[in-house]
Image (tube, rainbow, N blue to C red; front, side):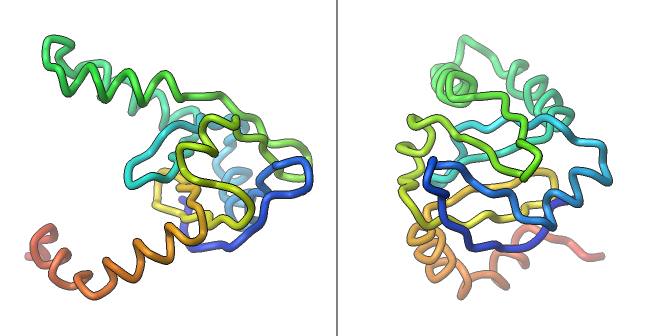
Length: 146
């Protein structure tokens, strides 16, 4: 549903402009509300409301008797914020989430199928530079095309 890489800057009020491709995908899939939270690799995860509910069920079923499950759920859910883009497709991400991801001015919005990731531009560049050389090796380990 969400695909591509888009470079943007926060506007003067600190809002993020959702790329038109993502706004179109949202419109086509009747998505009006999102949830933004702490993601992995120091980025933010942005889920449609429907996808958020699916993730919530999955993570809620993790055993609370396991320390790692408690820690993950605390950070993941305490950071969550419902967000509805305005008519121009802008969202205001809470400062504690921007701080977590190191977002100041320049950002990257990355479509990862069922979610959007919001990255500090320099962090994305570093991640991409570090990972691109191993893309084929990763694919070989994870994907069985037979």
